[in-house]
Length: 543
Image (tube, rainbow, N blue to C red; front, side, top):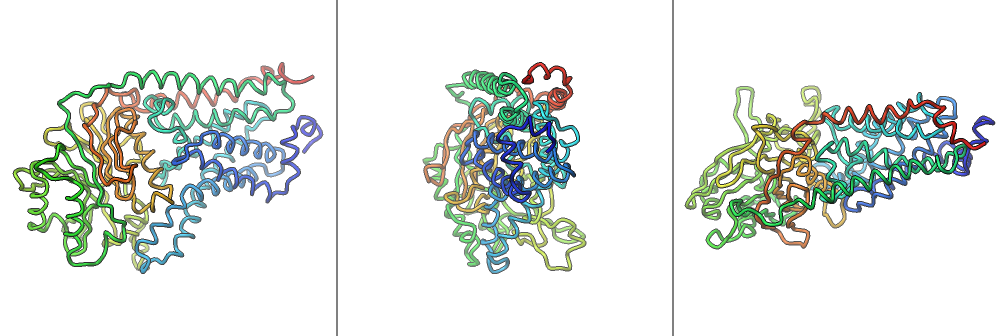
């Protein structure tokens, strides 16, 4: 630290400068872990703000050291490792489902391997900021834009993994989350990083008190304005639903992943009966549509669509109701048999089940549903976690399905619900979203945060598109969600089903109408704050 920088340093910076390299990296790891408390199920946004503030103070020290870019990258990596290890620990539960094949010990290196790999995006964001780093408030918008850029890349490169983006620290369905209807989850993430960075200015020892607290006041003003606008938007939500919309029941069997996949010859029939029990008697049920989760019926002895006796039993259990369900299907092709993770609309007409339409999953989970670069690693006997053949084949982009006596629907199968922008716009816009997922892979929701995180992210798709959602989740939260991301009814109370009239869609949101056109403008505007003249800030320096 130079003499001039030492004179300008606050007690916070001086204390951090006295720490060893590995102590500072340990603090970065701890800050990353604290940031996880901002996400579901905790939604403690102030802890996320504290964590980001601490990271900026650590970067302030790195900027004064030799090889500052490498030092900043290391701090960013340790922050990302702490954040993603504590946020994605639930992945270990997936290795317990087929413990004979994988063994429970594989879950630990899998968590650290995934977190360590994704942490390089945080390292990139911090490294990008270093060449233009300053010792005044201009570094705050710079940091926000650079870390946002790395988070955007994390959500898009190599298939993308936009899990726990910064914008998700705002509880879905509440006022601030409504901003996603304008700028999407990525725009909300950028603004969240800018707000979270603001308190770091209080440690700028060379600035006057007014200039040090000005970013906090600006951030508070932005939060207040957004909350007020979001509250006004929510106040326009319809209180009385139109009678033309159907009643929908979302249901789960209540079986864990290992219980569902017991290798009994009658397993498909046992699971079917569980689903029919929670779907209600077709003669007395008020629901016109029933939704079952992803891969509802296991493939133990046969594929669901290939067994006419099974379909007959399904039809009798449905009566005249429509079923939307996740299932596994296959196609015989010249090059061999290929498998699909699909969603299907099955009409129940007078007790006769009829397959109406099928939608195949477009976004597959790497190593969970397929093995990347399979042609290169096929000789190593590596199989995806689901272990159905060599994995699934990806389907086309999701398109809307025709559902009898209901608006056209778009199905998002499990992993797809974390990706914004999959919903068709314009003339092809659906009337509602159907999310079918198997959150039993994410562990028991009493001890694992994965099901909570997935549910929160899925609700943001309703906010972005202005569309209601019916969500059926094995082992997670099945729910009916309105077009503002608000929960209408769910299985939080421990029931295996939830039922309500489908909420109406609202007019296209700004995001649905124009896409992400505002996002680059927002990036340019915030990045431009870094290039304000230094003389503009000099007036606020202490004499």
